[in-house]
Image (cartoon, rainbow, N blue to C red; front, side):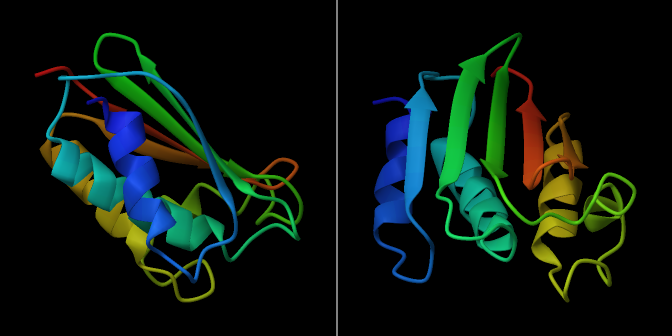
Length: 128
């Protein structure tokens, strides 16, 4: 079973999220439970932004795993977006991006945020 399907199953159980589309394949690269928890947290934060658009998750294998979580529409803007992962007091009171960034770094990865035409989080984690 790959990480993308695991994440999709976890998100399907969350009635508070807008529709979520998951694509891509990556398997055996990271702990699926940790990855699922981090991506669900990013989806929760992404749900604050955008309009009626779904959340898109794209999973790729690239010297580990890269997961983009994005939503088109209203976003924090290019100047404000990076602060969402740097400062837990930023972003409409959402602390999850900051916590996901700290966990990603503890695992040897990273988390960035971009705010053009909506919002996009990019989570990178090294392979196992």
